[in-house]
Amino acid sequence: MADALCKGVLVGAASSSFAGLFTNPIDVVKTEMQVASTTHGLLGTLRSRVARLGVVSLWWGVPAMFIRSLFYAGIRLGTYEPIKHTLATPDRPSVWSKVLAGVLSGSLGAAAANPVEVIKTRLQAGQFSSTAVAFVTVARQEGATAFGAGLVPHVLRGAAVTASQIGCYDEVKQQLRRSTTLREGLPLRFAAAMVAGVVTTTVSSPFDVLKSRAMTTGRSVPAVAAELLAASGPHGFFKGWTPQYLRLGPHTVIVFVVYDELRRRVGLGVL
Image (cartoon, rainbow, N blue to C red; front, side, top):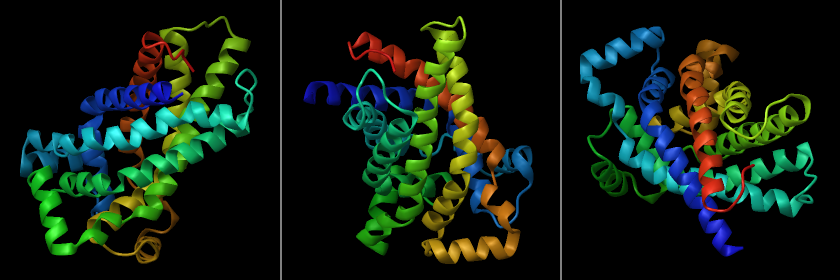
């Protein structure tokens, strides 16, 4: 059991890190759109950032992303299957057991990764020049409590993302096997991951916006939410949906295609 759990965590971390290399630029643009008081849209924000900070800035936060993947993605993906099998019989898991397993594993991963998420978000927002500098500066100037900024929306987002992403992927994949001619392989994984990407982006967007603003401003979640609602209305909680999907859609596809393949290769079996 312990060996399988360790393999699952490492496979989850590896697949997420690989996907993150390709989607980090979109994540950076999304974060800038979420924390800015005004927005010029996806392409406008991208052009503005490249003009101000250069193309390399689109990969700011990558070291922190790798560390985050080990804690967040590793834990949420690595513990999903054990939790699901604890909640239901392995051969007949219900939709709700998959959703609950996603909620629990996502919450665990987000809570463990919150300090790194704070640093990654601030790096992407351009507040620091490197991961090491960010960790040291925040610890010295703001204290350990700063690493808990945005914890509540981050955990809620982790729960929402994992339940809607891996839970949806797991269920859609099962339904496609039953109702279509698709069998285990790249086309089946791709189709299930595309559906999961749309669902995940929509469900997680409000939590993601609140998390980004709380982490970059250091303000409380209720204060950030009230300000956002007053300034932009309910639509404000979905700021950056397009870049969020452009990141989460491909990220979800890459993660699960790689994740299932790595699981197969290390003897864990596919979802």
